[in-house]
Image (cartoon, rainbow, N blue to C red; front, side):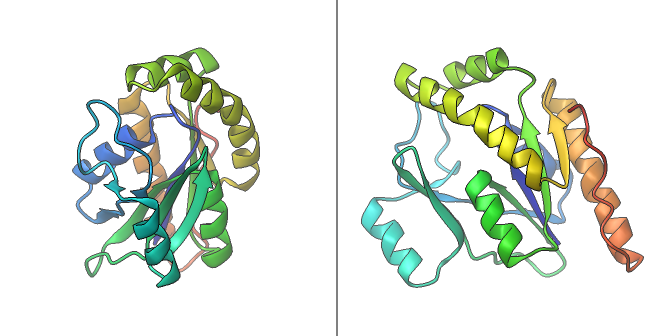
Amino acid sequence: MIFVLFGPGGAGKGTVASRLVASDPSLWLSRSWTTRDRRPGETDDAYRFVDRDDFVAHEREGGFFEWAEFLGNLYGTPVPTPAEGSDVLLEIDLEGARQVRQKRPDAVLILLVPPSTEAQEARLRARGDDEAHIARRLRAGAEEERLGRAIADAVVTNHDVAQAAADVAGIVERCRRSAHRGGEADRGPQIGA
């Protein structure tokens, strides 16, 4: 199965995704590529940081499952190569989620949203984004959330990262159980929305 965790910047996607794969060894997290600079304090493995030429060359070779340009930077998910028996977890943006839905209608799209604009702004500041970038992310975030709700199979509000990770894990488990029974994946409710 393919699970897509998507949402606006500052929703906590990276933190929730990290908790999910740490607690569920059968989830394989794809590491996205980006042309943006690494943020202060960001780990080397948060993304595969590349220049625009390398990114474009990889895209031309068919190396991306999905890719998009956002706020002047390119982001892309490589074609997944999970270990046998693993489910794929993609941590991507709205445009990536749309592309995945077109290619894989059976993918489970989980929208993660911040509890408020104020919380989103605080998270963006805490990760070291500059003021201009924060302002652009906040303007884009409201529209991303509105459009994301239209395509999401489930919505989780990240009031608390431990609870949000547990809520997403619950959706993953319900979908797996439903798929093993041979039915349509039970994607779950709009949690905390």
